[in-house]
Image (cartoon, rainbow, N blue to C red; front, side, top):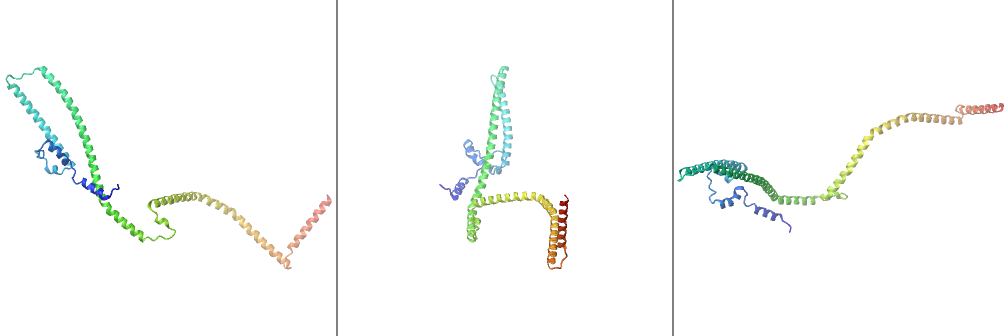
Length: 280
């Protein structure tokens, strides 16, 4: 069966009608053991009893420990005096032998040892109960705080739902941007994939930036190597243009006889080669 928030709040409110406190929780036990336990004979503040706090409870505990210690001493003193007076005024008077005192001391030692063991057990039990009480107190405060928070959640949820409906009505998503209307899980997945792609691009950019100085040096070296070639190309182009111009002027009869001189030098060279070949 699905739980409604109203049912949960009603159940928690029903369980928290009675305020929890150590004094109120102990009232049934103390009333069963002592009907007049509500009447206090000590001088401890009744306000601390009705409205207990950890500080007031510790103060009461210290007061009662001191009071019970004094009462025990007074009780033992009175009982010892009474037994002693009865022993000496009795008829016949009670005479205790030394051996009986030894046996009583032996029994007293055993009883004291047993009492120390019981005291240790009680101290351990009290420590365990204190730790459990503090734990339960923290749990109770946590539940109370969460209950108060839970009582305000329905109103906040209704307000958020109304705001969401208004935003959905006002939303105008253009075509091709369906990613803007994705639900939260799909949006988170899309954001993760985009973030991974961005990290990959950043890594590539970092690699390229680290290789940039080396590429710049290579570019400068190639530019230095290219400058003499550019100069040589310019000179060759200029010489070719000059040769073309001279040839055009020679065809028109206006230029110099550079081509004729070349042909004459070539003819002389061939004649000399033939003469040298005949001499051999």
